[in-house]
Image (cartoon, rainbow, N blue to C red; front, side, top):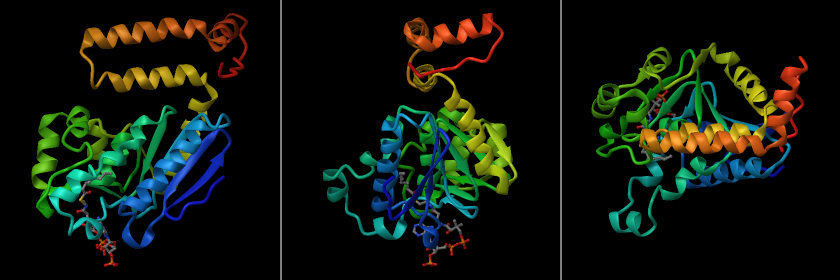
Length: 258
Ligand code: CO8
């Protein structure tokens, strides 16, 4: 597979693992890193031998936000003309499921990148925050929108207006994080879950991901309509036939992702 300057990529079975790797700056997200991350994710998305993806950082930091030193002198017209941050959300167009395995700091853009993934698992010492207000700015890549859908207005407003961090335990209670593991076990556990997900029918996994993510955008009736159509569509796959036949025959299903 390709090599990148700011992320490490490896494949473990059917799981693609992308590790943010700018240790000197606590994985601060600059344009070079975001380009590498998006390219690495797109490569795994296209690769038939990959069924699920894990994105992680270091034990100290998932990512301490956008690179403040890179952005501090930007001017409005320049930001506007280049639509600054628009191409940083490429993660949300990846169609395979992505687990963010968050150890250490997930701040600002780091928290936003984690929220662009489908699922967040946290190490027990992880810290989440949207501290942009302390820098004289506001979240710019989904903090005010995704965080509010995930944890509700009270918690989101509190985090965004005070800039205070929350712990992994608080994040789990609030619904931002699905599971907590001891920091040193986190990545292996995330890969284990991703391996289970990747063993299922890929088209169904993708439809499930699509339907759940759309629930944050659609009205209930539109969401239910989409869900029913996607559910019906699974009956056109070989894997649905295999999955249900295997159940009736009391054996394990052998999915071919078709
Ligand atoms: N940008 C640039 N450099 C950073 C950043 C950052 N966000 N965070 C840390 N670094 C650098 C430090 O400058 C330091 O570099 P050096 O050794 O050259 O001085 C190195 O990383 C280590 O950091 P610290 O010495 O500060 O480490 P500490 O353990 O003392 O503190 C903290 C860790 C608390 C995480 C602290 O570094 C911190 O507060 N960082 C900034 C956090 C922050 O404000 N993040 C929000 C940034 S704004 C943002 O994200 C806008 C969102 C835009 C959307 C992004 C879309 C994906």
